[in-house]
Length: 592
Picture 1 (cartoon, one colour):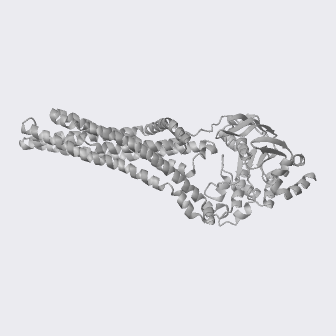
Picture 2: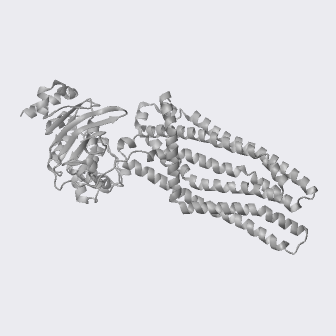
Picture 3: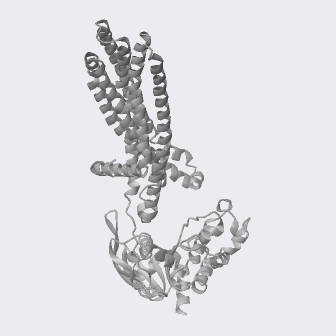
């Protein structure tokens, strides 16, 4: 990591920690009743454990004196032990419920924010990282509310035991207190070292998961290129660091356990030695010595506190990873409706888009009349896809406005926006169980079978769908689809939900020329009339459009018909230089 990046991460760390803590508090409130029950059961179990030595000691004294009340106190001992066991079991069961509910809430909030943010914000983290944040890290963070309750309860026994030691004998209690500063330092060092190690471990884990998912997505390319060994090395590059951080975590935990294991017997021996002296002096009885030794063991119970504290520390570090998803900006919607029967007039007013501190769309102002087919052309990197994203509000401009039939898109309700604005992409993702479900997937009521088939016919998908094992009912997982077939199904999905504005972002790039022309014909004649924005790489697509929007370096270079631009702009012809021969033929078609 470069020094500026490291400095930026250091500056953001306190804010991220506060955000993660607020997220954990909200998760605890979501299961507030159960979390309180965990705390109540754990504290009650600790109280029973505190009462146990005193009752055992007193019972022992009564039995040694053969007092008549000895059997009754023996039954009381059994009842206290049974209560402790029962309360511990209840706390364990409730802990599982709280962990599950808190984890589910964190995952639901993270997934909801991912789906409500703009796609480019959602893509900020690699798919593998996002999956790890929503699974392993959300699970770890979801354990914090119950772990915090157990940590608080774990303090009851040591603090109560120290108080009990003072009640039994002052000198015995003072002997124990000699080791308390060492216990405090031990816990403080453990919390500090664990937080640092866990945070680094989770960071390396995220990076490794991201590279693994990338490799899985490109498995065919890797196999074809024969670079499997290189990819394996790349994916596992940080494995030694991951192992080192993992070993460091266990070393911190093991070191703390070892030191506490050495410290606690020493404290117990000191307490027993002082207690023995006090017993020989007649200051305390045998039962009190037994109780003092038990209370010393409870007071030195750093193991329970350490375990609960470790869970809280790990969970807080994991919560930072999950809470990062909750910090993604939301693409809010208004409540306005579009005018009934509007033609789909699209207007961009001084639209500017900034990415990574650089302006990628520069102050674009443009009016596209309703019902117009517009081809957006330009060299690679000119901003065509971003223009298409802004036009249908997959993202918002940093400055300026986009209006559809006179209504700013920011003010349009989500339902109206997705009902009236459709998209088709160059690499569509098919969602649903079957091929028919994938075509009908979209906002609003599910279309009927005939509407699905009509959309498929318009996208030239019906012939190959009918040849699938079960036609439109074929499960997507069982459908052997080529890239072009997937693209046609994506087109069919957009046609099935066509509104007044339809954006085709290089959506015919995998189709052959004949099929692409058939799709264009169907789009003009069979699909609901409206405005079409076509991100075009084929010259024929530009030639058939009513209007061409020519982008260069994120700026609006010119607008006009293809024929006008082709005749007067050599630079425009150069955009299609790779298709020059086809361009000449299209030019003749335009001239005719």
